[in-house]
Image (cartoon, rainbow, N blue to C red; front, side, top):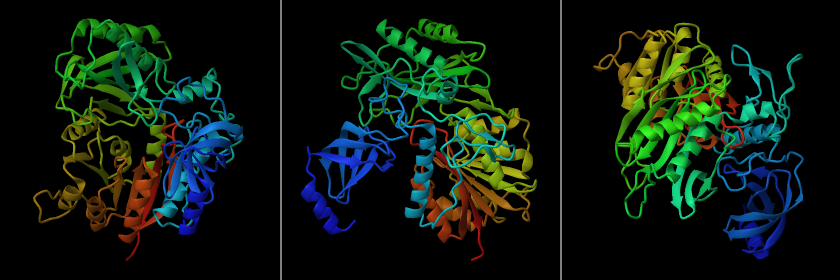
Length: 524
């Protein structure tokens, strides 16, 4: 943006001013984007295609924040959001958009960032694998949601277009996808709050039904609210350092019905444990059906006495049931999940995600696959039948233990897991002069690296280590298009060419999206 445009914007826009805007795009946090005299204005409560009257709430040199005062002309993609908490809760940012429009925006966002941050010209980004889509055995799409730019194959059922209609069975099944929920708690003079943080705030929305969660999950959360009302548990008071409960997490296994409840508390002992556990278990049983046969399998206390609850827990104490819960995926894989373990939050879409990873890896049976940021081993183990050897590397020791255990319970013998930072461990495994060198790797076999980092992306040292090991191709699984684009740019400088990417909609009704990207090594 030029200085002249900035000056023009300063002249025509002031804080508190009401302006009319056409919304052309959407930001990562779900705000509508409009422009006035060259100034980008991010508008809460607006979606692409809207024409709105908005009040400027904050003015910066290169952008402004605003809130919608009146909807002058609604986007053709607008629908009635089915959630009564939508305006306040920060969980969903796209419930006012048709599902086809949600997918279009997500794909556009990925392309924009690959071009702007990744310095790619016209990158090949396939249509988003949506929650209503079907895929073939090789991970390819055979049906697409309307509005995504692809046609459906003859004979396929019509795909879901609208995000509205809370009573729609098809849409309901697409929404209640999360197998993990993290609840915030607070105690007020009017009683306990159990729910999620408001958008751009630490204040809590007291939520009795979130449409992203399983009914059994919400039954558990509502039972905790009653437990707090009955004072069987106390909420932690940060000002005085007293109380037990700082929040809780619920994990659900769709394949088995097993549930784990993790209380984040200030001590190993769960107060009134027997009464608390039976109350929650009874609440789950009350909503359990033949189609959704969930039951409480594990209760764990995550001990956290730190001032900031985001600090790592100091211990995990099993109060009742088992240490882990077990899920069974659509393709018959079994995974044990512990309290701190990472597991993709959308089980059905996870199967599509992993199928796309296998498609891009294109294994022929002899390859060595390095599964980096491997967690509990889910991606690598799903590829083991077609690989020569799976080598997983993860810095979290407990995750490595889980990965080895998951290999055993699935009868997989060609997988090995190592604890440490991948940039340190991977080169040593391939170095004949190093004590970590492993002679079971076929030196002549192609090498493939699977990268599945957290939202912050890959450490630069790891990318350089992967390149120094001369892997033949990289399959990068990313939950953040911005850090993906940044890392692709560096990998390009290190000799890896971007081939294509396929987004997978793991997070329906939000701006978040997973992207599977294929890169191949080029001759330098």
